[in-house]
Amino acid sequence: MHCVKMLGQRLMARDFDRQVAEVQVRILVMNGYTALGIPITEPVG
Image 1 (cartoon, rainbow, N blue to C red):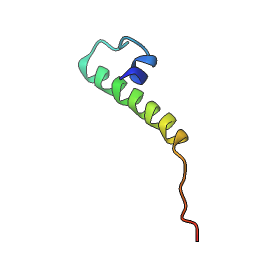
Image 2 (image 1 turned 90 degrees about the vertical axis):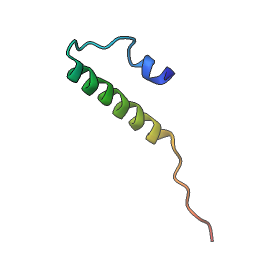
Image 3 (image 1 turned 30 degrees about the vertical axis):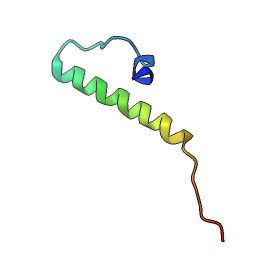
Image 4 (image 1 turned 180 degrees about the vertical axis):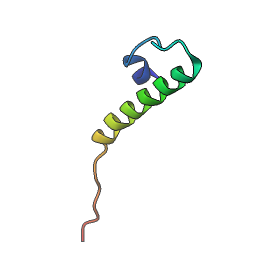
């Protein structure tokens, strides 16, 4: 939740459907940054 709040404290959209879309975009951005930090593990041998 802390990471989501770092993207902004408030929603800019006023319409509920647009608020839902805005939250989904924020989650996609957060997941993109998370994916950059996950190492790729390969078996040795």
